[in-house]
Amino acid sequence: MSLPLAKRRQILQVRGLSKRFGGVTALNAVSFDLLEGEVHALCGENGAGKSTLIKVLCGVHPAGSYEGEVRVNGRAASFRDTADARSAGIAVIHQELALIGEMSVAENLFLGEAPRRGPFIDWNLLYSKTRSLVDRYSFRLDPAARVRDLGVGQQQLVEILKALSKQSRIVLLDEPTAALTETEVDILLGIVRGLREKGITCVYISHRLDEVFAIADRITVLRDGQAVVTLDRAATSRDEVIRHMVGRELKELFPQRRSIEGEPLLEVEDLTVRMPGRRKPVLDGISFRLHAGEVLGFGGFMGAGRTELLNHIFGVYGERTSGTVRLAGKELPAHAPPQSIRRGLVLAGEDRKRSGLFLGQSVGFNLSLSSLRKMRRGALIDRNLELRRNEEFMRRLSVRAPGQEAAVASLSGGNQQKVVLGKVLMPGPRVVLLDEPTRGIDVGARSEIYEIINGLTGEGKGVVMVSSDLPELIGMSDRILILSQGRIAGVFDGKAATQETLARAAMMYA
Image 1 (spheres, rainbow, N blue to C red):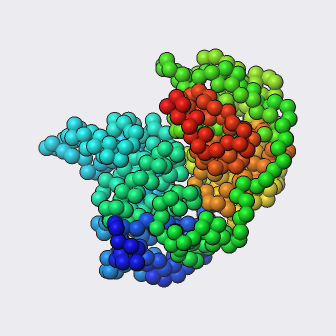
Image 2: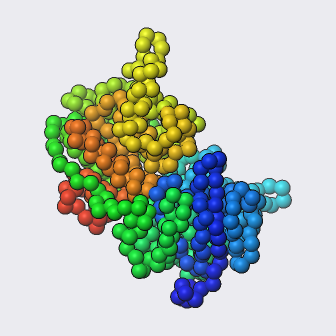
Image 3: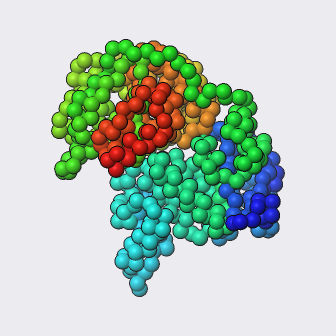
């Protein structure tokens, strides 16, 4: 819309909104408003109340379960469920994926609304409508692909398309880019700009402040369940937003550390990997060394082979057709995760909720899971030793939880990630493979994760870190290797690299 913000009408108002879960106050008298055709960013650390506010606005938390008032287009809104919110023109893209893995992209997009010819689904029309939607937003998605066969990033694109297909007037985006590559993020931001031009209002939640400043008109900061300030994006700065978020100054997001290059710990030579039954390799001729005290960063677009490389080295992916992987000078065979852990190689995967944690279990259960062999006394687990070790790692990693017995699902994203790190660090590894270690966590928790990584290298351990966040790669890595189509497209000194040179390398074979 071409009207300045001051002249746009309010499309939604929230007044005095409070929401409690037992004795915990998630929202405390929050008030804010949305203007027609604006992008309004919500910023705050994990646990600040952002997702709770979104769930009130989209009907997940129904009227009567909270105090305060929500008004849409000047009328009081009392949503009983998400269907009521959709009827009022509110669509939501949750951080948590809500897709059916056995169904195709097309079936997920039009679930419950598939076009029919008599009593049967009109499959030709279903796939035609899906292709039109995919093409409209320039997403690389196969309408016939099963969702379970897609990567996390592509699954997120399906969620985004589901929301955009509803012709809503208010779109709530809760960490929509957490699993996307830089290219896909650019596409999504372009989509959001297009929605704004059509007069559609977007609420945008992201821990990536670069995105917030690239897309937002206004920014509301939540801290400890309260709305502490609303700022015009053009009149504020990244440092001011961070100060309001964490209640303190963060002078250096990437903490300084002394670079130590010791003996080679992990050596990969001419590694070629393919999936069984496929001729084209997923990884082609990969060679590198990781030294003690070093952070070796891996970047590249989604599908470049970054996750596949870490998973194969650990022993859970693909068929090795050539090459060797050596750990501390001794060859490490493929498909041997238990042997990898025993010899000092561990992996923290990219999706903590799908492959890193048992969400229905306690913090203590998850922490000690990889170390139970070392806690046995005969045929039984030494429970006292397990409790002591769990407490030690909760203190060491500053895990904020009521106790070991707390459900890990109840923790914030940053604290869940610390539990993942605790689980892989408890066996005492020499080499730590980290796949997107700060995905979906706030700036304060990111700083703590960076300190943990620096602590590992200070102890002489080696860290391999995959990240889609180019500033993070540059800020944390001693060296950076860029993958493109399964091949190494560039090797860079972390201190001298720029986002432009890394992005250019990532497109070399694309």
